[in-house]
Length: 391
Image (cartoon, rainbow, N blue to C red; front, side, top):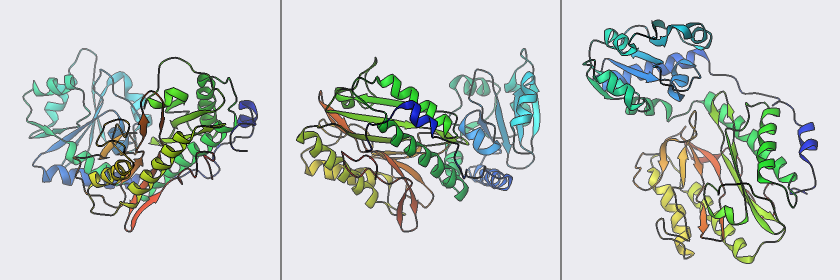
């Protein structure tokens, strides 16, 4: 039995850390990333790029810090040693985390980190697009010639290396296993919050830092892409939608399963079949050189033939078909009309053309794929049926 029949305690008791973890990103790969960013910065007519705390700082320097009101950033010149701008009191923590060779430029609480950046840059400076607006305006006030660094950062991060693919594959395999076990603990009356708590504990038991996020929706709540406020309690003959993910060395999983707990109506089963077909159509449309928006269009063709939509109208698909994924759970490029980025080997995407039937239910099947020379390859195999969420 794949749905029900077990308990959270029993499932947690049999979980152990992942047996064959993927290797961490090697120093040589980080060096190659820096070299590519330098070349792209120079080609853009700039002398340096500033990369703020967050996913991109982790990508280039291995520092897994989130952004705060204090500037922590990597200043990467076209020529010369990388520079890390950091509060002085954080020096020890930064030195323990950084995985590249870099000069430290430290600032006290009553000093301006923006002056440190200005003193180190002699020409045009590109900014990380994720840098907070207030920091960008403070840099502009120093008189620096500023530009948008999105094209540099996106061009580096959008194509995943074999090492990145391995980390992504592990994260997704771990979450799929946790999804399997979550289905086993379901029973009438279980609270969504209890399932969420189990999934977080199970993600930790299998070797991650816990759930990066988790949505558990029953019945009517499945009609809302991100659920409804408050707790819910599972009833017989309801749809279950669980969307969750974890991180491995910062790389994300994000997997959704929608299935029947008991018996559900023929209308839900028919919509599930259309969703399954749309997900497959999106996958089959993938090929190097094809624009991202064509994958979204392929899914919508299936829905429109079934009388859903068109466009974002309900009943139908209210959001894009998919998003890029890596060190950020949502990152460029996007499988949506208007994104004409050509697909290329190494790009990674979610595939989730959710169908919403307003005030009744929703069906979302979400798996991820990476682009190959011959088309697409699944990280996780799609759900086989509404009654069998796992093969």
